[in-house]
Every structure is written in structure tokens, then in C-alpha cells.
Image (cartoon, rainbow, N blue to C red; front, top):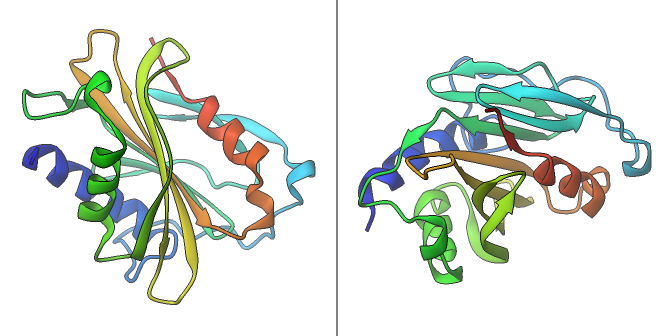
Length: 194
């Protein structure tokens, strides 16, 4: 099912997961800063550019690095990653074709080696994200250390839906810093640069 897309997404997500608590470290991954995160109410956001994508992230995140098709910024026990543009083929799902069952299946296919007990937590299909069509979903999963992680995923499409980007935000599910308003600010600020 959509094997080309799945293989490309797997590479991107494995790199981002490894950088923020997966079972193995990605080569050349940037370590998380040694600072502790402020309280969510004290979060200060800065605009960062991840290739073709700009978004607001807390100022405790590292500078953006680029490795093998993925832009990455690490925060305290967390990460934001953005893929290079990927061509949309006839095997890919367009925003209007997504539903919860596809989001659950993709989550399980891509993350079952890193997480157990994968459970879809949210889904919004075919949404307007700052002028571009997008699909958003999130899931909980338990890593090999027994930590429950929350993975938020956005597939962002260009104007004519011939290219797509995979954006992910990953952190511990019980991390007090990543209250709904912090995660929401990051996700809702995702913008494709024109």
C-alpha cells in the first residue's frame, strides 16, 4: 500500500525518532541542548526555517541541522523534523483521501519497530494550514525504555499538490513543557515558504 511513500516516510521518521529517544542514534544527529525547558507558560517562540518550511519553535531548541533529506531541531527530550519536498505520485494519498484508518495504518507501519502500543490520538484531514492543504494526526506510543511518547505528524502539500513535506514533533507524552498551547503554537505555525 503506497510503498514508495511509506519507504520515504520511514527514512525521514527513523532519523527524527532516533534523534529524540528512539532505540538507536542517527548518524551525525545533533544532541539535545543541555538546558532544561522552562514552564509552558514561560515559553518564548522564535521563527526557524527548515528548508522550504518556516515555523515557530521554543527558543530552547537547537539550531536547525540538515542530514540526508531531513531538517532537524532538538529540544529538551524532543525534536522537530521536516523532510525535503517529496514528489506526489499516483501511489500517494492526497489530502482529501486521508481518513483515520489510513493515519493509524501509516503510524503502525512506520513506527512499530520503535514504539509499541501505538494508539491514534488525533486526526484532521484536508485542512488549510496557512494557505496550503495538509493532513494532521498524532499518536501515542511506548518506546523501548517504557516512556510514552506523543508523535504529531503533518503532511503539508504545495499549491498544486505535486509535492509534499513530512513534519513531525516528538516529545514525552507527560512532558509539562509541551502543554497543548506549546504543541499547538508549533503545529499551527507551519508555513510553506512561497
